[in-house]
Length: 272
Ligand SMILES: NC(=O)c1ccc[n+]([C@@H]2O[C@H](COP(=O)([O-])OP(=O)(O)OC[C@H]3O[C@@H](n4cnc5c(N)ncnc54)[C@H](O)[C@@H]3O)[C@@H](O)[C@H]2O)c1
Image (tube, helix red, strand yellow):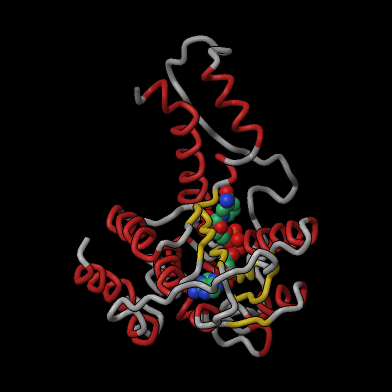
């Protein structure tokens, strides 16, 4: 995709939200800055964008890894449009917290970002991060459209950044074991594959409670920058309190994860 098309695309995404202009203006011209040059003894400084369930867990995993590996990495900044989550995770990791991810990307000391925001933000934030010289760990799904996927691949090449898409169901041990069992013929000839996922718990399937006072008019830690939350979202007409819970979990999120896992596990059989 040409850089002109790329700029058009970013304008389109931005027009849908994020008080459009500023984030996208910073992309106009496609300027890229190199990442920090790390010495052998330097820590990798990580920022986490999106401090919900997944972001909190990722932040803890990276912090634990750093502690067990002679300080190989550390969390230096976190960001969430929800004041309460931003504060809680910044306190947990004793680091700076931001409501606006562009302030995180502007920091020279940040080497890599974990993007754990809702799906509709993934491609935009990953592109911006790479343009600012950051490596990216991007929660699945990588993006929504083929054009976004091409942009991401091209930007990885242009900026020479590392981008890894995280998906538990193609990483955790049990799924590798299942893949091997299929490849080894343990279950005989495969003629069909079907995946599903269920939780047998009193809490049900991600039926989290909604913070009653949280929202765009919330004061103090109840404040959510709802306009930014919704940017580029096709569900922007839904009420703030419902969307805080990312209620499209069942249809979109799990589908992505399970489809990719089934495809990966059976690739050599069905796609040969
Ligand atoms: N690797 C996996 O298999 C796996 C597992 C679970 C979730 N995920 C993915 O991780 C992502 C997050 O999931 P979750 O369950 O933590 O959701 P969540 O709704 O609990 O958390 C998302 C957080 O992002 C914040 N946010 C929204 N817009 C933002 C913006 N513009 N800037 C900064 N923060 C913003 C929200 O306020 C919220 O706190 C989803 O894309 C999901 O698909 C991946």
